[in-house]
Length: 453
Image 1 (cartoon, rainbow, N blue to C red):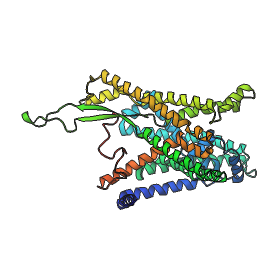
Image 2: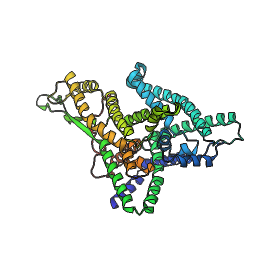
Image 3: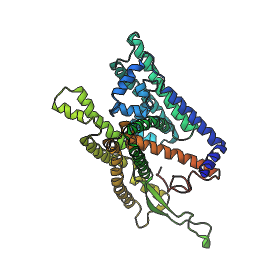
Image 4: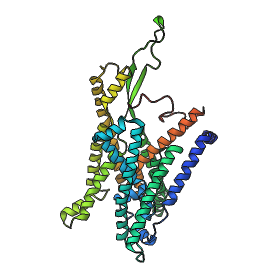
């Protein structure tokens, strides 16, 4: 405890770090405040009733509500949150794999290319917000939560503008946190929304267990959640190190020929290079059956489609698990380019001991990536279906979502990234870091050569 208090004092003593943390907390507070400001013309009591009736369902709307910290169900000015920006970023990232123009912007045009991509992403965010905003207002109207005394045209026009402004403002908050605060701003906005639902979920589960004299069960649930988080940290941080060696270079003349400093290093290949993207893509596909069921008529086929909207059902989780494994392989293949690694090593006058440079090196890296992706994809699939497993053991839906899935992976990844940045500030000022041991990336020297540029 004393060590922890000393670390907090060290953080406060670093002026730049203190100012960045205060700014970050202030902007996050503004974002949370906007999550409770209801759109004009909306009847909050009707929304509360509809939210209470659907609290047991975890469909696409429930997932969006989790990411927005409840703003979606509140019909707040930040109801769409930062999700349109995330959608636009994913689209641009996928275009970077398939369209030569975006490949050129991302890889060859440097800072100018990145600025151009940022501008295109912002414009696409506005377009997506307008489409999603119209759909959201239609959803609000279908619930009967619109004041009948307000003309329909005025309600739609004003609130489309407000929703778009809210999303753009949230995007601006995220960029400001990234530039002048601590951590990745956009990721922190999503994380703060996810964390905001945790206290309510814990309180609901505690009340439920106390009513049934199940305090011990509640403690066991918290212990299980703790170990799940530890396992997720291992998956996020896990790397397979490929040892490399740099060729000797001349320092001085004659007898002064010495090997270059740091002649041995390694390439860190992440066990889960795809991150949270496979889960996002898999869940997006799993929402299609429910959508088709809503569009179709009745009948046995429609009943089968509707069954896939139950995230606790066995068919749903089996297919979701397989999709996550498949998408992990696909996305890893798009992200990890063995040929690019081989060319980078050649430019750096480095090689993998026992492996010939060039194509042999690329094939070796590709084989290692393929082997480590299998356990990584299986672990990612297990994490994805853990909420359903927790719910099957009686954990309430809201708390069960923290036992795995997109929410837990985002939460762990963002917290680790933020801790890494704070750690770097402490070490630069000759203070002890947040931890004496462990593998927070960036604690000691650089973790390997990193990805080739």
